[in-house]
Amino acid sequence: MRKPNLRDARKRTKEEVKIISDAYIIPDGIESMGKGKKYYLRTYGCQMNLRDSETIRAILEDLGYEKEEDYLKADMVLLNTCAIRENAHNKVFGMLGRFKNLKKQKPNLIIGLCGCMPQEEVVIDEIINKYPWLDFVFGTHNIHALPQILLEYITQKQLTIDVFSNEGNIYENIPVKRDSKYKAWINIMYGCDKFCTYCIVPYTRGKQRSRKKEDIINEIKALVKDNYQEVTLLGQNVNAYGKDKAGNNYYLENLLQDISQTGINRVRFITSHPWDFTDDLIRVIKENKNIMPHLHFPVQSGSNKILKLMGRRYTNEDYINLYKKIKKEIPNMVITTDIIVGFPNETKEDFDKTIDLVNQCQFDGAFTFIYSKREGTPAAKIKDTVTTEEKRNRLRELNKLINKYMLESNKRLVFKTVEVLIEGFSENNKELLMGYTNTFKLVNIKGHKDNIGKIVLVKITEAKTWSLNGEIIDEKEQD
Ligand code: 5AD
Ligand code: SF4
Image 1 (cartoon, protein in one colour):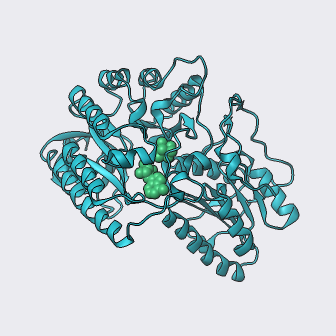
Image 2 (spheres, rainbow, N blue to C red; image 1 turned 180 degrees about the horizontal axis):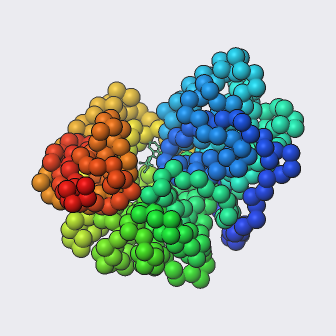
Image 3 (cartoon, rainbow, N blue to C red; image 1 turned 120 degrees about the vertical axis):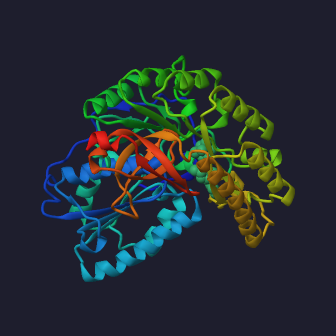
């Protein structure tokens, strides 16, 4: 049993990151473990987790398992978890409760847990004490070792925990089975060294380590050959790409410039921290039409006092100046953000500064959260006096304002023609198609299904807060 440890997870040494290309091996004895069997994999949290699940899926299918959407029919159930807020934890523990009952009816059911939650010491202790009927647990650093972990489990037939808290390596040549045939997530870096005081990610995902340019470009070139239309570059803070390597001067702007020449039609990137956002980056986005004009640009708070306590390393004024500069240089840029309300001891005045900032920026969209205490982070030590009710009221007020600007932003598109990558059928109405605009707005569309997988021109007919309606304009020619 290998357990995580917070002290190790916080460590950042000068040790060089290893790039390991031969770690994925299927050991003798489990090659056909999943033959004739089904797995249910549920993913919580961010795009990074969704991408990890595409690897987990590939590994399980290498072992012969088939995908199953209904956990009641599965032989193996696995939860890929998120640790960012308490409610993500609660959902997972709720699901585990259901699996416990299921195991009473199906004693051969194999139950696994992975992702960010097992990287937390407190979670592992809770599992050992309250969930000993779980079968296997692994973390974010050893997904490639899933076959070995499963072998250990089936050999010993007892709870197998393999989670470690090293700073992290980079694993290449690990299989992937992508969810989409048209758009792909591409990890360009792992981990985070920003250590914002409220955030658990630098502990669960390890130190920042950038993938080699050649590995990223080759991955994208292969996708272009397979007719992929869009890639989204992933990192906790993509603007810091390359800054973890001593003597390196190849950064996100250089990478984006090179990726834009691979033949891929659309390039996105998330998430951008305001700290490392350079003029060169703005120039490269502006100059390359296939780099999409959408920026997810978390501000977190409008109060300088709170930003300082959060360890964000910019002020309200820095953020707004940068925001205005980006909008001036790239007027069609759509900017969305993340905001936390109720950071410990956030006063009404602090919150009003956030409201002021939202009014100045008029974001096209935002994810908003009530602060959630994460054990082991510096902010968890701050004694908080703000009531939960007050925090809920602030969130409600903020959401109302965000929604107002979101609807206004969407309304500006009505009767305009936009490019949309058609991804499939609309979730709520299977007679409609769905896809995203260049600016990452969801559109439900009237049109022929032959357009799935293509980038087409769509006329927007109606704007709602969370989505747009539209119709494909050159439909007749395509019929
Ligand atoms: N509580 C609430 N929200 C958080 N986030 C990160 N950590 C916390 C926390 N402890 C939010 C931030 C980040 C987004 C991914 O999640 O806004 O940008
Ligand atoms: Fe967390 Fe801050 Fe890193 Fe984002 S930049 S993952 S909020 S520590």
